[in-house]
Image 1 (spheres, rainbow, N blue to C red):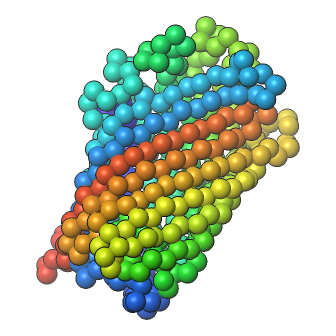
Image 2: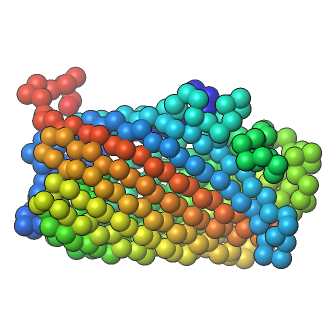
Image 3: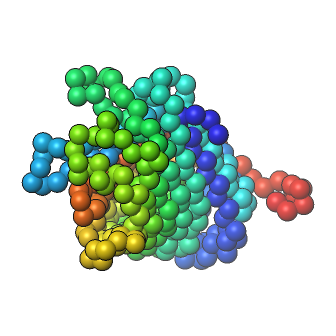
Length: 326
């Protein structure tokens, strides 16, 4: 694995045939068109930023912040029949601190039905940066710390006869008239904070030190409600699709004396806009995810910002099977 930001996502859409046939039977063709060429290859450069703030309402002076070595990246996505593969890598020289090597890993799987989308995921940040209070452009390494999340995002959306979540956000179909839908999302997950060699030299605040050095693990369930609308121009050639989700949930710490449930809140917003053609398409995406988790000692706020530009090409199935299975 390369040093720096590295994302690997393998998606095996084994339900492809049944999903596509179900979608064709269940949509209003006056609002949604499905493409004759179902396979795609995409190239998407982007920039991401992630930071964590540890705070307590009665002690703002000792708020503590850690940031990922955020950077630019380049990604490639291929979908052919039931097999999808995605890989992205760090663009050299785009990290916040080019001297500090940090490994970030993301693994995921995504598939859709007519009304739902499932996205199991694994995310790990191994090593973070401490912002220098005297300079916005200088950082110190926070060695040995690892923040891990594993879980499943489950989406349910309404009005699927006239609104396509996939068309609005992935351009895998074409919305030809404007429409929107309520979106319900649930995320069960297991999360942990691990610090191999705790050092008081890095932390003056005793509460934050206690939190990070305790190797805490917890399970949580977060539910959200929101709305996604797709504004259409020129009979679907151009679209502008903003969305928003907000929700609450609860967590329970594993192997802890305090068995009380603690609150979790989350806010997500995104916009997807671009050209959606029968063979070529290009769209811009910007997203914000702000999650606040109460961890008994302090509240951890995780903020993710991602901006990308995707260019895609559609192609049909080969007349001959590839490797005898595709």
